[in-house]
Image 1 (cartoon, rainbow, N blue to C red):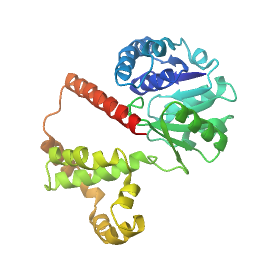
Image 2 (cartoon, one colour):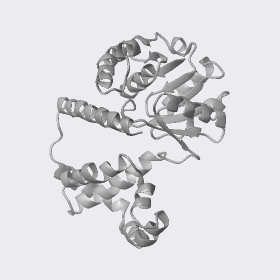
Image 3 (cartoon, rainbow, N blue to C red):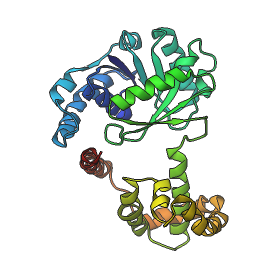
Image 4 (cartoon, rainbow, N blue to C red):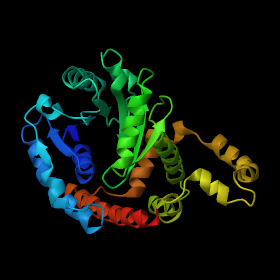
Length: 307
């Protein structure tokens, strides 16, 4: 099987590794000269990191399955799946998907990694719109396996099912978004938590460092194995219905006290940024990203042994 990766930036490189370690041949294309070649080279070290944590059986073989394509047409030749990772702009998606739909074989699935644009916004006018969908990853997808599959009203159910089965075979954790919604599922959940985090920090209830600790050493630990519905199931003697009955008055009070306009006001955001402190240098961010990826790899390896 062959996958075409269109856009060889951070997400494109990660997708390339997902497919390559799963045994697929991968062709990368990027409009920036040399970007695809550089991405192939950078994947070597990352695949080695995956192998060190038991997340890639043969990093050398996986890397050998990666190649840079000189054009979109060359990347698409023989591809069963296309993963687009272009700019997060509607005009760019319209242009890219028009080209993909024109050049790809009729049975090739065309998927976008967009995190903010619904599929219907950039596929309505395409002849092959039934095979188009969003496959929204979590950064970085080679370490965080959830993939949100969201089609337009005209997307063929068979395209969603085919893509879901493919990602499951690759070791990802696909979910199906049953109808289009702004931000999909993960981003909406994340937004709800972030708005409340900005409110709590900006209004002086907690420091940003302690709030992060509350998530990483509290909610995050629990949520890394079970989600909120199962948390409720385990937190009341008679299960989820009992949990909701006990705590829904509190949930309602919290929801009624939430004010997104105040939490996201310029004044409140400025207080949050000031409380957080000075921003790290680009080199510091890169170093923290490498540390994060190492920790995510270790966690992914542990979870793999618990399944």
